[in-house]
Length: 240
Image (cartoon, rainbow, N blue to C red):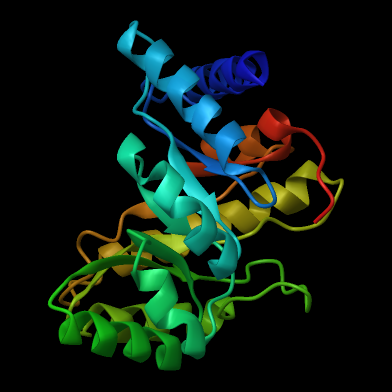
């Protein structure tokens, strides 16, 4: 596992170089769905040691798809200091559970969910980083706002109290054609650029682009990803 994690870091460095970007400019998020907490902990500790030894980049982020896994693993991992992101769907009745541990919710795909998060954060006197999820591929199996409505949703989210809009997230197209996948990432970047440049209050800091996974991280980095979500390349294939 440690060797695979280092290989992913090397891939990131090569992708950054090929795109003319600074080494370490893209954050690595470990997507830990179904991975036992002890293995996650070992991966974080190994990566932290490499970073302290002079490797490029910042310590890894951790991402969970399921609220129940986040709640189960977080107590074992919280002392590591890694940010804990929710990267999967969030039902309104699980908001309280998610907010106990999540430092960022990347999967805000409706104004209803954003309002629920805002209300709960206001009630507990805290702030929360959020990303708006966009379905750039148009595939019915994927969640997220349609691109034509992403700007309206994002600006509405930015206006809500206690939420800090940090950018946009997407899951790449399920295609073997790299041009198709890359076009989706380019579309998300364009939407982000329009958002940040709009001058709408709360959008200036929405520069993040969470996109790219194990099979296509190079395409995502080339199109401006600031976070790539990697699971299989580090932990191997899993029964999801």
